[in-house]
Image (cartoon, rainbow, N blue to C red; front, side, top):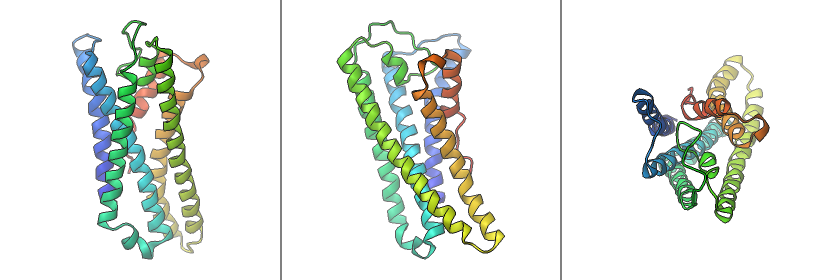
Length: 229
């Protein structure tokens, strides 16, 4: 668990360092600019760390499932080598995910100006500046694939927690209940906050969209969503 918490902390530190320093620099120096390459790098690293964090949260759910539902097999299923392989897979998948989105987004021609309605470079706001219909559909297709992948992880998390809660309810002592819930509920809270803020930010209807709401949601999932363990 300590190994996964270390990786999760690195993803949070990375995502914060990707967006906050530039925003603070612009605020202190009263500027609102970022270079084209700087924007591409910011988008790549932000989505890299955020996607890796989501995959790590999914892996940590599996860790809790094995620890509570199959404690006698924990050392076999989650040995040091298995943990290292799963963490490496999370980082590698996040890297590939971010690389595909960055390459697709910045291959689009921009013809609607260069002003982003956000304090950092984010895909939906860049797509609003595009005038390429085919490129826009390609990026939307990538987003749909990403949503399917994210939904698969979400189903896995829900299924794991159903099994966990069923196992916990069979524990006879209240002390066992408290120990199990104190281990699972913080993780479940972080997952819920992370997913709800991201999904609402990306899937909310245009009728309730506003610059202030977009800013608040972006701050929520990019800055104020550390692992509350």
